[in-house]
Length: 288
Image (cartoon, rainbow, N blue to C red; front, side, top):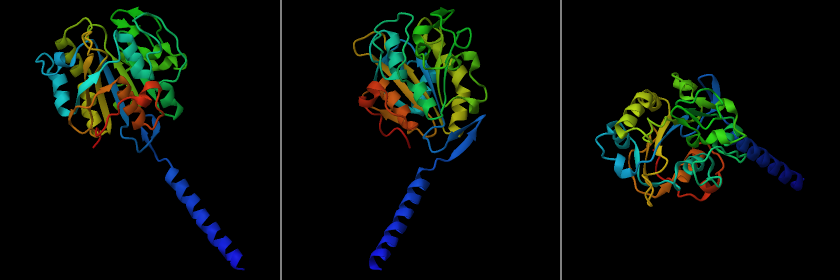
């Protein structure tokens, strides 16, 4: 009788434990735009804009970049951020996949089948979109078109990324609630400072992102602005700034790189760490 009573007590505690685990593991959902996403993430949407070939000292404090400097004051500014290497293409691949994929130049074209940010997001029922200015059509695989350069578009190289998420900038939604979970925005060669001026790139960023930033402040979303590399110096120091209602404003002096930014995005959406992001310097104290 005593043994039976102990068994019943143990069984009751076991049922309570299992129930609490199941309740704790339940994922709540909410509707945003035309899709449903899990709640509880630090950001509902992240948009990453990648600029070109300028160092920290060429941007921060530069009167030709008033909008970029306003973002640096409004959000988090990283004063010790670095590209992975020179030239451009390996940095884009690193930010997107956690590896340069053994690419050390700007050659076109390459094909990979390894895991990347897009496949990781889609694997947990989230979404990804890449928007490239001057790209002529969805799924375009050419090396060049007007001011578009494939070397600045890493997702097009991955066979496990659907062509439909490789989009021209004209596909960027005006209803921001319909944005993918994570989006990359790639200005053309004139508007990303590769060929054009700092002032031109600053005006472009304001014209294309100011409305999104205002919306993001009220919709738990964020903007990241980074540069692929600096002006080809050995230090490869670049500006990185992040803006959003969840971001703690101020100066962040920890040394980071593209793998660190990828790791932060992965942590926001509870993704596994890709490649070198697993051992990258971690971005800390960024969220309120």
